[in-house]
Image (cartoon, rainbow, N blue to C red; front, side, top):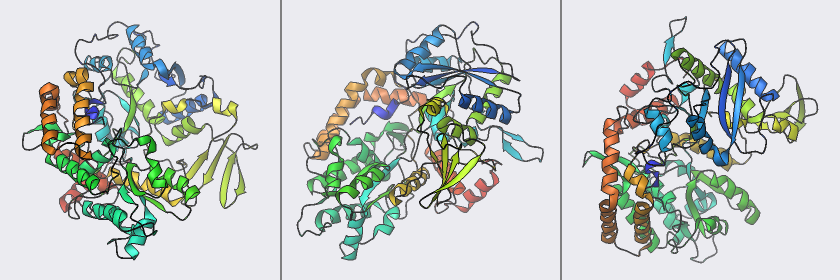
Length: 601
């Protein structure tokens, strides 16, 4: 378990002794003509051959971006580099002072961090969600698609509290609990469980525990034998997944949080709620609610006890439920699989969920190639257009076309683009959404191969004639997964230290991680006592952990936009308000959020 690896997943190397490169002199990249620009972009490629600059899809993207920006034309000059050595290419581009106008940074190396501090990239902190006044006197976002970005994720990619890029979005609320729905209902029907499956989105931790014990002792498979248990935990290599979720539900920080007792941010192992969760899991192991071989059980075998009807719960990503439901149908068609996001600590406490970092790399605007504020704002306008839904559809699926044929495929209406039906199709789903069917024509695929690397993944306001394309699944479990994602976001608990750098941790992460990882697995599995676990924590502190904490707090103290318990609560409550979920909001908060509404939100 990499318990402390998430301390600086956004900072992968030392922050000391690094040479800042490529920040002086003139860039060799063509200067921008703001009416008919040629925009040079550097992107990673995963295919043997990516879409070239003459691709019809690239031309369609250029035309759509130019239309949205209100300029005559726009040309993209995409510089592809193999993903396997993309980081080296980025460093080489900076070292040779051959900066593109837009560059994707896939990992926050020490070089990237130092160049950010040296202002090699434009500071976008106050620009991403900048507002202006329209002709009606209304306050509107200058860049409505960029304004849809998540404040937590923007902070996650920040350096010293400043945001130097536009992140590529990834699902934030991914965590989920895969569960045997039919077991819950069978046990509830015979009085062995106090609730049915219709209650799982409102579970408390006490009810979650009740469910685990019912799965162990209530004969959920009805074979008359005590041969089932509650939850499967792969403690040999992924104890952190279930543990971190349970700990956050229970009030512990997400990796790092603010400790009111000490007045500083600290890793989760320093919090009582975290230790209480360890002890709870240990009890579950001792009493057979979790698999007794937890210390040696590997995640490669994680699915097997669930599919074989031996256990009924897995805490992992929510999408695992979709895959498990599909696999279960082949083995036991009568079994029912469901998924939910979390359990609240108690019915009168607001839920807490464990988010992902929410991004996969980010785009930077080099100051060597984007030299003026006017050019910077122009590029932000371009990125806003690139982040629109129309362009996202082109990046991910190619050209939709202008003429349509309608045909029937079972009970689904398929809109086929092009008479031969080989390029693109859209399904009008029963729930009102629209799904894309990708082409199987190699020539068509080549037209947009790897262009999805250019997508930001934001979803701003849709135009009246726009279609948002999504993946549609026929199973109820798969539909529920998407609902879990959205619900989880409302209660997310960010990692307070995600954006910060600890030189000590960078140098000694392997040794430090190993201490706490081994101790935690041993304690939960019953091999050592709590006092022995605390002794290992003291050893972690003595061998560098205390210095890591000191360095993290130095960064935290200097961060003017630092996360606090109050700012996290406000951000979550605002999101809850925007989604019509007001259970945990005060009347004052509702009034405040109503007054802050911006056109385009």
